[in-house]
Amino acid sequence: MTSKKLDSFLDENLNDLKGRGLYNVIDPLESPNGPKIKINGKELINLSSNNYLGLATDERLKKAAREAVEKYGVGAGAVRTINGTLDIHLELEEKLAQFKYTEAAIAYQSGFNCNMAAISAVMDKNDAILSDELNHASIIDGCRLSKAKIIRFNHSDMDDLRTKAKEATESGLYNKIMVITDGVFSMDGDIAKLPEIVEIAEEFDLITYVDDAHGSGVLGKGAGTVKHFGLSDKIDFQIGTLSKAIGVVGGYVAGKQSLIDWLKVRSRPFLFSTSLTPADIAACIKSIEILMESTELNEKLWENANYLKDGLKKLGFDIGESETPITPCIIGDEVKTQEFSKRLNEKGVYAKSIVFPTVPRGTGRVRNMPSAAHTTEMLDEALGIYEKAGKEMGLI
Ligand SMILES: *Cc1c(COP(=O)(O)O)cnc(C)c1O
Image 1 (tube, rainbow, N blue to C red):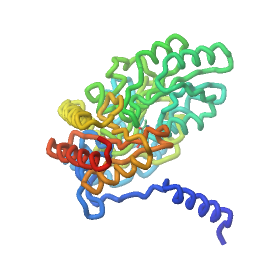
Image 2 (spheres, protein in one colour):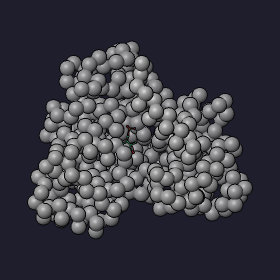
Image 3 (tube, rainbow, N blue to C red):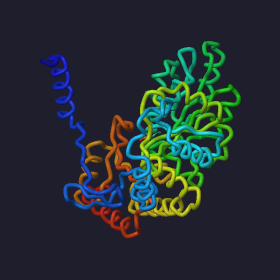
């Protein structure tokens, strides 16, 4: 017999979510996650993936993955520290360090895992972490795992950060203090104020940690937010994912050699979980080579992003304060936002609604993620659908 307590917990909570219309139903794709997708037999223009550069379906990556499967098989066979380190893991890590302009890099199974791995490898209960209130869930969980004191500062509020850094330093309670931030914030598309963060970090000797999941491949001609500000030698930890612009799966930490050496002996997902598969590694290497050889895809991404943003603005939509391709279309009311997303979907655009508690109450939005793979025709068609649905609902 299985647990009755568990059954009642699950029934109660699932019914509660369903009753409040908050139970998320997942739509499986019947196609690759490209600029157009197929769901329930219907073709839709895809404005919801993180496949910024279209590399998830790139023929060059697919070929590299197939060749790696032929040469190495499908699994790494062990954790990295036993005998699951293939020569191509090291090749990938060297490429990542070049790509990020750092001494070294270490690869993990995902961006989420990087934050589980890296924070608790250096921070403990005698330390404090200054964390932007809008940081990604994996940063929040990684901070908790470290048992350090977590001190949240108001989103991108540098006065608040300085005050809290000063208080934490002067309290004498903490051994080390870290400041941690997303490079690009995923709901609004705004960029962290890294030059000011570095200045404050230098003043109080803070460890700097930037999770650039949405910045890599996008800002700094592809090299990311840290490079965008010319701060490659001033940030201690640069986290990236291999699953967004890079188009595959995995994550990495880039930084100085001694930091990477430490993570290889002390970060738990590296020591206790099998690493990336040969196909993933080979596709990632190819992807990074493409990004380092040419800025063509990056330029196309920005061209498409600006085109979509201008179009939505001209139609009269509120697109917020985004500084990156992430393009929110802010509707406000939660119910209206969900209805708008549904109507877009019926007319042929897949753009997810994002509402409280993911974003503050009353700022519900449909979030658009244009990519380098969209054609002008696709964007025009999407804008036409936005206009129709927006007028139908009296939003514009
Ligand atoms: C998406 C994201 C992650 C997770 O990356 P995965 O590779 O998908 O696990 C981590 N941090 C931030 C800031 C993200 O936006």
